[in-house]
Length: 73
Image 1 (cartoon, helix red, strand yellow):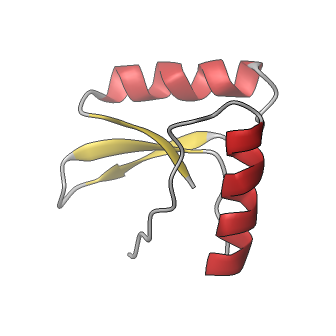
Image 2: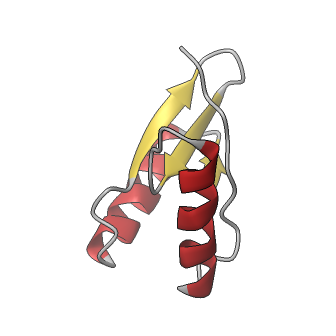
């Protein structure tokens, strides 16, 4: 579940750190080479259903810009 997209890695890392400080310990970032963006994610899930459940919880907690992104290796 993605909560932000950044072109610059340093901004992505700072935002991930800010969310971890707020108590979202699973927050991290990943770089997508083909797209050229750094994605901040709050959760990684194995199924679409689990992702949607996490998405609803995040939005209820105030993370309004979250969305589900499918990322493949």
